[in-house]
Structure formats: C-alpha cells, structure tokens
Amino acid sequence: MNPESVLALLASGALIAATGSIHCVGMCGGISSALTFAIPESRRHGTTLWLWQGILGLGRMTTYTVFGALAGVLGSQLLDLLPGPAMAVGLGLSGILMLLLALHLAGKGGLLAQLERFGQGVWRKLQPLTRKLLPLDHPVKAYLLGMLWGFLPCGLVYTSLALAATSGQPLTGAAIMAVFGAITVIPVATTGVIASRLQGFRSPGARKFAVILTTLLAGSFLFMAWKMASGGGHHMHQHASSQQAPMEYHDPQNQPHHQHH
Image 1 (cartoon, rainbow, N blue to C red):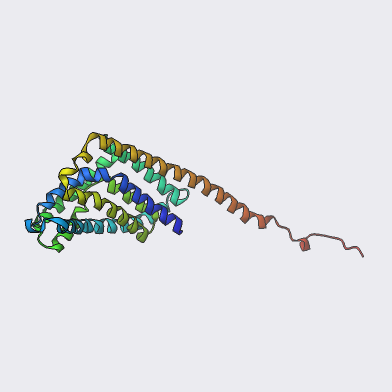
Image 2 (cartoon, rainbow, N blue to C red):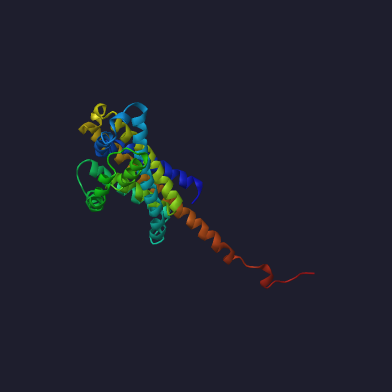
C-alpha cells in the first residue's frame, strides 16, 4: 500500500472519531464519570484527575490498537476474495457501515445494534474483572481497567475496525485504531472531569447533528470508493492494452521482403 493510501485511511479514521465524538460522550461519558468517583478523593483534583483519565484512555487505546492489527490481518484475507480494487471495495464497505451507524445514532437500530448485542455477551463475561480493579488506587489498575473498557460493544468502534480491515495490513490497521482511540480519549476524558458541564452533548439536537455529520462522512467514503473504482478500472484497461501491444508487433525480419540492388 502506497503512503498516500495509508494517509487517506488514517485521515478517515480520524474523521470517524471526530464525527462520532458526540456519540462517545453519550455512550461512554457516564462510564468515565463513574470511574472518576472510583479514584481516591485525594487524587481526584486538578491535573491529577486528568492524568488518571488519560491512563484509562491509554488502556482503551491499547485494546483498540490490538483489534486494529487483527482487523488488518483478517482484511488481507477477505479483500483477496472480493472483486475490484481492494481500496475501493474497502472504502465502499466503510461508507455502508457509516450509513448504518447514522441509522444507529438516529435510534433506528439495524445491523450495528445486532453487533452490539453480540458484543454485550462478551462484555458480560469480562465485566466481573472490572470490579476486581476497583477502587482505582494504582495506575496499573487504571490501565488494565481501560483495556477492559475497550471491549465495551460500540457501533462506532466496529465501523472503525471495518476501515482498519480495508488496509489489509496489521501495522496500518493498528495505526488507524490508535488514531481513532487517541481522538476519542479527549471528549470522554473531558466528560469524566467536568461531566456536569457537558450535558448539552447528550441533547436531541446534538444527536441529530452527529447523524448529519455521519451521513456526510458516509457519502464522502462512497464517493471516494466510486472515484477510485472508476480510475482503477481505467488504469487496468490501459495496463491490459499496454500488455497486448507487443503481441501485435511483427518483426520486419520475419516478413517476406525483396531487396533491390
């Protein structure tokens, strides 16, 4: 994969995270706020609280990064089975998933809701482990709890993992999810620090705004996929023509000819 394609995927992962930040606040903000009160009161003030929230976010980023690497490995196998340019197919699938995410944010349920229900089964098995890490009186416990938090079922994460899978490379997939996780850490950590000031992010108007942004992002993915598929097909046609050209070449030495003296 060329550097331009890698940068495009990383930028797309960043856009998904930025667009879905309102969703992150609505879904994970309550968890972040609750974990704030799991930190000893003496360490729950000023920059120290930001540090604790950062450690939790770093643990969550770690899980996302590992998932991204696994998605890249899986994507390398699946994309070989699909017709057309792999990058175009991947972006098209990501666009479709973003549309599903928009429906999910609008409360229409759908496929992502079913995936979240499947993920809830995994989360129920892991949730007892989180209780063993409370209270958060040591940075290692906060980091491990953040890693477990990364398993929480979330349609936005599943959409980003689909994008990571389109890379077909474990390192690129890991980088995409690391970028995604880093951007989502900011609003979630902020909610945990000053939750009472961020209630507006959970309003119906904010959710509608997130739906609009997600739909626009889905449209841009589908448009890029269409342009890439069209350009790829044209390029493949030119490449095929260039390969056929030598077959039509006839060596003059093999042709009957007459010499005139």
